[in-house]
Amino acid sequence: MTLKYSSNRTRIFQGMQFALISSLVLLSGCSAGFLTSSDSNVSGVALPASVTVEAPDDVLSKTPERSAHVDANTMFQILAAEMMVQKGQPAQAFDLIYEVALHTRDAELAERAFELSITTYDAKKIEAATILWREISPQAPIAWRASFLISLSQGSVDLALKQWHRYHSLSEEGLDKDLLLTAQRVSTSVRSDQSVVFMQSLTKDFPDSWAAYFSLGYVAQVHGQLDVALTALEKAKTLQTTASEPQINRQLVKLYLQLDSPQKGIDALKPYLKKYPEDWAVQEGVARLEVQAKHYDAAEARYEKILKSVPDAYTSRLSLALLQIERKSYAQAEVNLDQVMLIKGYTNVANYYLGLLHQEQNNHEKALHHFASVMSGNYYLDAQLHRAEIYFSMNDMAKAIKVLDLIDVDSPEDKIKVYRAKGVFYSYENEYTKAIEQYNKVLAIDSDHIEVLMAQALLFYKLEQFSAYERNLKHVIELAPNEVDALNALGYFYVEQNSHYEAAESLLKKAYRLAPKNYYVLDSLGWFYFQKKNYALAEEYLQKALAIQVDDEVLIHLISTYWKQGNDEKARALWLRHHNKFLQNKRLQGLIHELEKL
Image (cartoon, rainbow, N blue to C red; front, side):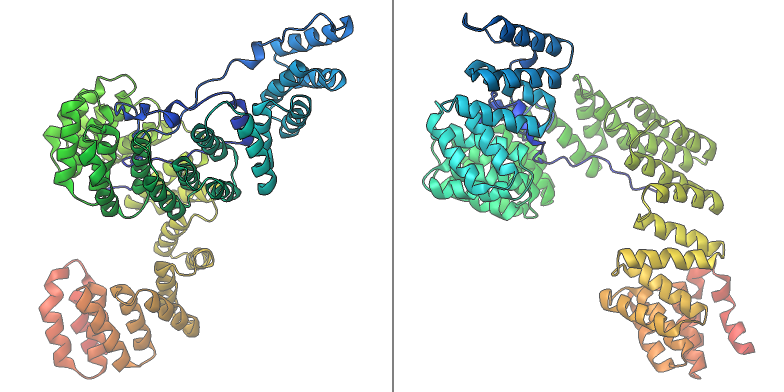
């Protein structure tokens, strides 16, 4: 038995989206990974690296210098506000500084009010401070940058474009850098599809700029509009400069890893790698594409090539080890994971995969040791679940449940994993009532959990709690009208109960339309027609089912159908040909004798 847990084996680039206020906090920062070629270092935790931002100056420790003309009362208010900042009261400090700036129309105070508004995480305060600073200091580019982000977050694309052009006219940076910084800000602060529309408008304003199309591709990728992203990045390639070519291809490899067309990505990136064979970030990405395309020999060779030139490329070494595990090259995988283990920050992931490696070889003691060594982080829960699974496979139910009981998790998703594991274990031990209780805990968190509703329904059936069984299946069908297993199960149940024949026919015919080559759907439909005494049609569906899968229940139904049609010899011949394959099925073994008594 292998339980299906999330193993974290595949990590692809995903654009992160943060709230507008988070982006505004970083308004004065610049993107180290986004504007430079620093992501060519493949020894980081995840490749290709996501966009990073330099930390801004600490606005909470900044006190504006005041000129001599400020009166004593104003200076007192400024000092009082800064004392509030030091006491951790930024909202109160903002209110005070904002009122002073509004009264004095002082540019430095307006800027300070803006800085403090960001620390309040209050969108209304940020907007008010931005408007005030922009009015008092219309030549301040950051005020206009904040303005277009606010307008865009409110859905005002046209206004945002006007404000962006004002920002760009005041910015000391060049067009390319302004566009790239804009893409970063927009991708992290504006959640709606308006951000893509905004970036598309900038490509119309700057149709000859590679950075405009690159920025559109980046933002579209973050928002999941992958086709738009690919078209934009391919256009950027036609306009690329020597300096921008690596950046565009690094973004392309991230995108191809998200698309379901790895071979297309491999082919598209070959010319670039021929030109820049030592761009290890792209090499690593292409190796991952080769894994997706199942070109395992090529991927392994590429990872080896990376490691030969960059021995500390630990993500590549880890990826190589995972590929080797998949290919059952356990000795080589263990060597690579042992090296990964030596790197600070990689201990948990290395222990986790070493645990998997040994579990797949049934080296239970070693597997348990490594899983127990995963003490925290993203791999902690899955490691404990695997420990429980191993104990269960060793017929030590008590230890398996104890491991699950000791797991300390807070999130609903993690609790569901633990409850489901207990439900599976109790089910295998035929402790159906306990399993149902665990599944009830899942449903208390997520009442629409289809997999749990189905698993629990099976237990209700075994306990002959048929009303609960029917209730669960109906609920699943309400949630997922095309769920073939639920349609088939409920339809077959009605047939077995000799009730609701009209509903049964409707359910089973729908399941058949959705899965015409599913043998158990064919069997159910055949058995429905048997019960309706339409033996010719029953034979047709049951023969199709048997041709797909020689199954004991299908045999019982088809033999019974032949017998009902008076084809005793055909029924006996079919029974003789197959009954020895299912010695555990007592009904099948005695079927001919049973039919002879009818």
